[in-house]
Image (cartoon, rainbow, N blue to C red; front, side, top):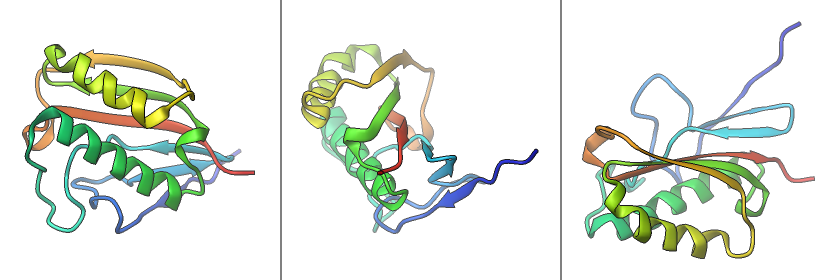
Length: 130
C-alpha cells in the first residue's frame, strides 16, 4: 500500500537549497523541513544574532505551515538545532513567545554546524486544520 505525499511550496519562506520540499503533507500531518534564518526574498541569512535568526526561522515556519493548511497552534512537535548550546536561553525565550500557552513536544540538540553558517534551525510536525 502506498501513501501519497503532497509537497508544499510557498514563496513566503526560502526556497529549498537542496533536493527536498519545504514540507510534505501525509494523511493530514504536516512535516516541515528544517528552517534556518534565510530571508525568502534575498536568500541571505539575516543579520542581528541568534535572536534575529530565531524570529526569522519562526516567520519562515509560519509561512510553510500556512501553505500546508496548518498553523502554529496545531504544531505537535519541534526539533531545535543549535550551533552553540550557549544560545539556548535566547532561543527558548523567543520559542516561548512564539507558541504562547501552546506547548508542543520538543527536542533541542547542539550540532557541529548548520547550513550557511546559521546558528539555529527548527523543524516542526503539525496537524492540518479541520
